[in-house]
Image (cartoon, rainbow, N blue to C red; front, side):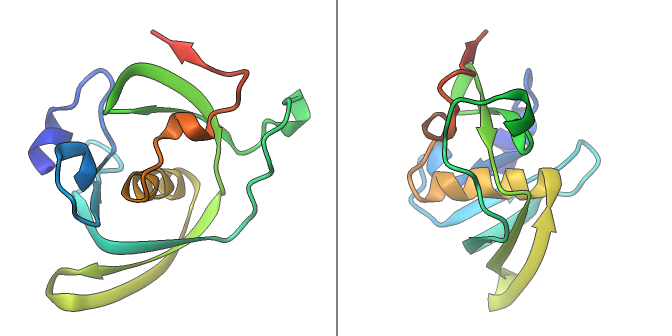
Length: 135
């Protein structure tokens, strides 16, 4: 998984879940920036700490929390997704150490996206109907 994530270019990948490489495991990895180390999350559970408003026609004032997303599994497809800004994630580290932490911002978005992969959801299912883009 680390090799696949590292080789992702244009766009550069920031996260990868095991099902994306054909593995039926509850694991995802993230690399938040080019200089960041790869972090491994085993058997993660995500709890949203703020609500994601239901999908509706978006007006400018409703675009808060909206971010453009893509997926290494769906090359050249992008869409705007509304995600919670804060989440709690619990997971196993190596050697069965249970961790739990609150995260926010871009890191929360990455983790929520990769967690979705583990539950069978790809980002297009969460895209606002008015924001599809293909390159």
